[in-house]
Image 1: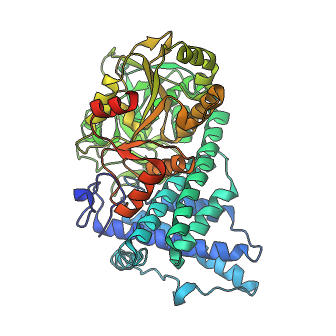
Image 2: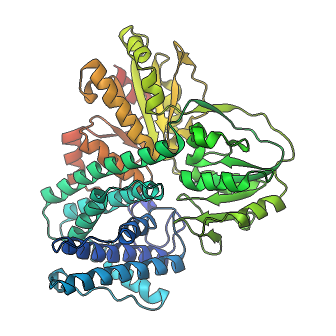
Image 3: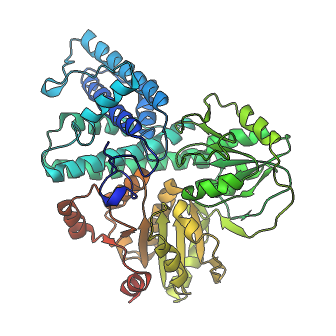
Length: 544
């Protein structure tokens, strides 16, 4: 196997025996094969457009979901991957048949034959190895390969956001068209460096649209988030823990647990959902339990109820709680009960059979709900405070958390941010400091939780609005981005920031293994992107 898509990849180079995430070689190969057959389907989708043939909505959704299955910490189940490969191939062949019926070309480029999936997992794995990131999906030029792989990883992030938005009825054919066009180019593998760079930046533009769709889907369905205290303690009674990202899944769980005596808690990036008016109305939607995804072995083992993983970020379940954990959507682990039909009765019954919390615990609370509507509603106070010198600088300290050493940088950085500065945060990287008491500046909290990773859209809109208010470009604002990354949604967001021309970003805890020195040089020269150093040094450089 070979996989180097996440920040924790072995030795900073690539996992070659088993994934640091727990991914086995056959799963890695099946995921590579799934990407490749999706690229074949994409080529036919692009060809179909030349003949006025539109892919069915089912095909569009399948493309996004298939790529979602290949993100880090999502699908570890070979059988589910095999089924997804078969579904993509069926849709690919349907497109080819429709093209042929109109007299169009159905010969893949460079004499390639459409993949015929082998009947066994072992056979599929061998096919995946042949077409993977060290096989067909690479170029003789290392820098071209770097950009090609960056594009693939970015498209995976785009697909995840598009999938979430589509579940709530928000779609844009331009997003799917880009996925098809970009993956068709991966299959053809004929572009030069500048053309690949252009596609990478275009991916950032399309991801901005995908996040905009998801923002509209969430806010139109559940209302704009409002400032809300979220208890970190527990209520005496039965309990269900919901992790992942998907708001629709959470809503269904809340509906189905109403009146059962079960309290629902969030975990990981579900924390910001407490700020949505249509979700917080449920009386049994109590609080937040635990921190980021990499701590689930300890936290899930201690949780006295059932656990539902709605999207990505699952780790190998320990035996102590393997009977208590359930998956839904694209997430899966072999042997773990998967809920495919939206009926959460198995998880509810398990929660009722488990002891739950035996007493109330009154822990801290944290504030959520500082998305763009909330912050812009007090924009006049913010602007006045900046002009009066009460607010010197804004820091967006955001991104993914992880287990790799070096992430304590973000805790120390926030702790050392001067008292006249404000910290905005989003995604699970916040759990390095989400419960710190930083106080306020004239009633404006110094720590503002903007939301999930996709709520980078909200942060961008805040920055754009402030730049207009001060009549300067975004790069001239007293705003610095200090980012942590782990998986491919973070890659997509980074590409969006590059597309928008954002400069002087700091990225850590280490740089992506798939970025070659020459590609990094381009990023440094054009965007002044930097690796993090130490909190003291970085604060000194930023603030002077």
